[in-house]
Length: 275
Image 1: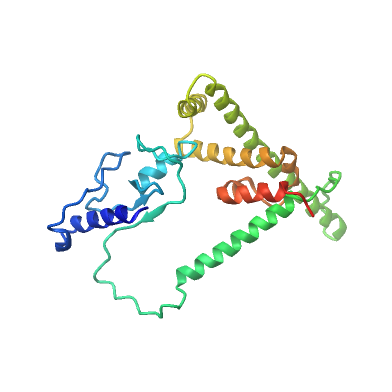
Image 2: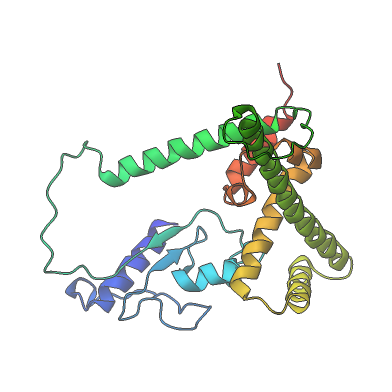
């Protein structure tokens, strides 16, 4: 986002507050939100999202739009640039009755900094563990063990636990496979429509097919599963469908929540030659 865009955004906020700083200034005001056609900065100070192309939307409007479209692009008719990491802005008024925050040294980490650091460290650990699993050949599966309810035979009780854990891994792999196949079908239908339609029109046609064939489900639930399917399909299409059988401790939901850059890192880590 350029300095000029940031200045226009700041001026628009100040004008809405009737601030004397911009009272006599002339500037190009923000357009309305193209999704709801309402003013970007409203009296209730709704949270906003600024895309990397500098177009501004109400946060709810753009999140709703991007959850229903793939690939994610700016919906502005003359833009259509891919959506990269965005800036979310909450411009709600602060309660004047709240006490002023205590001053901190400039170099002292805030609680938000600490929280972000912990989250990044956790995400890095999860990513490394998933790469490790996908890089490890699966062990020969054990033969099913009949569960025996013997309160004093710890061998039988331990075997019950092992068997249950094995069955849970198989069920998880089956679920990942189901998402993968759903994503594969979406991709194949998209390629089919691309033979006679532009890419974006093809995407709309596929989305319409999905909605027509699965009518008794809310849009939010449906598109969550669609996005999970596309992400899981992209991952295992590139590293090999057989790698699904290596997943032991990560659920389909965990994998689908990975960021795109994490997916790219996993693909590179699995495919690059081992020294």
